[in-house]
Length: 154
Image (cartoon, rainbow, N blue to C red):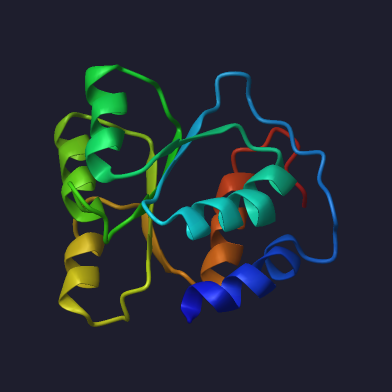
């Protein structure tokens, strides 16, 4: 239900009235989207990431994200991390990344409500911020990604 709502509504709200952007990012900027749900991955890609023209890679679970960043030494500035995933949850992946000295921004994205133990643990794992999988959360993700743009709007 939350996903269905933001799939339909997120793009106009996240990007305001603009239909496209000319955002440019530093040549070295890389983002990793860590999400096991293919509908959420594709929806966020089409509704936000492509419109912001942000370069990004995808990992389907926390273990893959940890492998890419800590073992393969792929450099990312921004990691968008789901929590409820198979193999390694976002909370554990975030703790592993921080323990491995990853200093980039990690934003958690979850459907868990405020006050839920899983969400509380996720928020305490080393996230820079945690958002809900709804229209305001997706809008916040767009704002955070845009903060890395070379052509920030006033």
